[in-house]
Image (cartoon, rainbow, N blue to C red; front, top):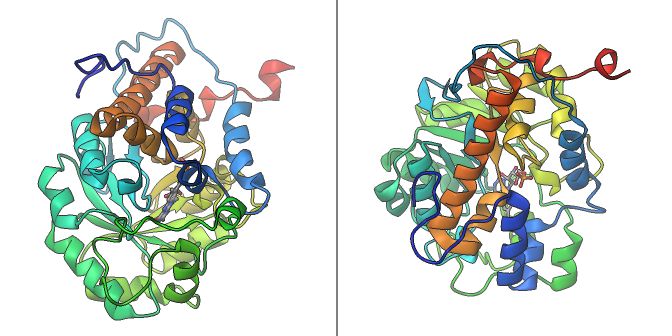
Length: 366
Ligand code: FNR
């Protein structure tokens, strides 16, 4: 499972994340494929995330003596093998029966953290038992605060190291594919860390409407701090104003995210708003980004524009659907291999040294 070579047996790993996506599409039920791939509304934001990375032009420097390059980085005091973590996503069990335990094995093999969703299909204890890298909990705040509190306590008991409050989801975005399909979770797919008898989780959009607290404000950071000693990051920040509010409220980190285009349709791409947010943050807290990262070179572009690290979303689910833990590990290995290639070919010695000089501007291409 580990390393850059093909896992044993007849399984031949795809050569790009697009190939993983294509193989996953042919294996999954079409409604499940729509659930993971889809965005809100016209899917403009979903497309914008990817298009912003496609517009990037790198500036290779030659004869720099950079050598092999060191992709490792430190985030919230912990060393990561590379500036990449797995984004929180609900119900990995929809992709593979092993669910989040398979993802945790893959992330551990690659030395990359895993952000576990509130709606994980496997229990925090099961995930922690096989994890070999930091685990963070993504927190949805429910109308019933006691449920959220119990969730946070269970994760802390299992050794999770940080909380990622998702702030862009006062309700779920209108995802037309799911509405058309009347998407419902199969009965065996349930949120393993939430009380089984207190809600009907089968329709994510309906449960989102009735379960999530739509009236959160910045005081929720202080509340999280009052129930847990873990560092708190805020996910879903898309403006410099909110980055400043997050810091003022005591956040330890920010995830620039539009939820992979699944919430407000019509926002800018995350990569487009990153430089303004990085300027506002000015190194005062950890700064992560997600949305549309599909190549190792995308990681380098995000670092060059001010991120400390990125989260990788859908491609990890594709890997799981294709070959369980081996597939997820293959996806992460591929991204790390592409990142190392991009570093070597741009003359970037360390991931932490990536800056705006890596990116071509009008003066380079006119
Ligand atoms: C998500 N995302 C998400 N975010 C979150 O905070 N809590 C969650 O439970 C989920 N669930 C979820 C399920 C699925 C199927 C997807 C595709 C996404 C959003 C996720 O964390 C991340 O912001 C985006 O997926 C990143 O974009 P890419 O890499 O998928 O383009």
